[in-house]
Image (cartoon, rainbow, N blue to C red; front, side):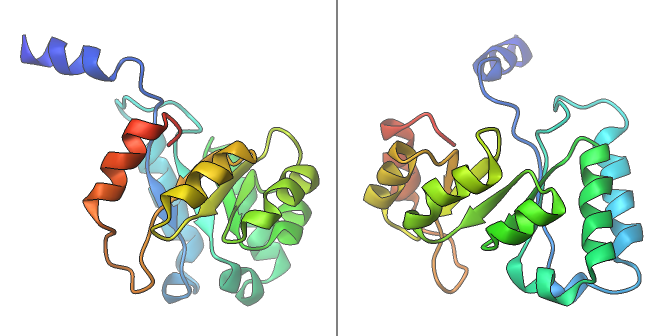
Length: 170
């Protein structure tokens, strides 16, 4: 009975999977092998997730570090596996390399990102701990927002509580 209650509770929720953020620490000769292994595990075997519910996010410093061929290859492999690929803070690279979207920090760039990447692109905004900024971002066309602190610690849980009452946007 508990299983059916829990299942029904999540029936209307969007399928949100893993958010894999690449970093310079993992860049190296084993990166492609590790990404392939992660994607294999994600897409094989029983899962409640559908394709395109997982995200590979490539931070802007890695765009500068990786060769064009490597970056294109990582994006192509991810997309072939049904994994959404975002390039952070670099709309030009997201367009050039065929990423599915971007995660940016400047609210003034939302419309530019939507125009540059197209109406189907995924555009997210980093909102620090600012709920008003997040509401404005959604009204300007952001698909999702993130809340974070400068030092990488978790934000105050009250932010999640307030956001979940204000919006159904993830």
